[in-house]
Image (cartoon, rainbow, N blue to C red; front, side, top):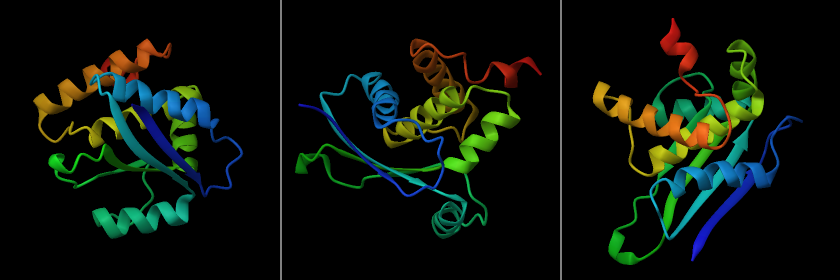
Length: 155
């Protein structure tokens, strides 16, 4: 029992957090749902590959911070695979700088956000967004970082 988090780093960025940090942040999101075991794959990319994936899977021709690909495995199969996360390191780095956030805090937020998508959370409807953002805030502050949306709500 436990979590298996597979990490593949295909980014040239020198600012990608350690595997231990990446695993801790994903695990925090999984812990919020009291899972006994789960498997997540994390793939870290640069902008060109991030743009290709975002274009192919979302029809948006620009790189984005995090993409979530929930596994489509029937529960009765008994495989704990939740899905795949793709994080574009340069986008996360740029956003952290633009939003004047500590880079580690923004990485943590992106991994928690993406992991919650793998767990079925969404933010399309306002009520869903409020629930997801509240849970993200609880997890992120529990990790010792500032609330991720405080700057957005203060404006």
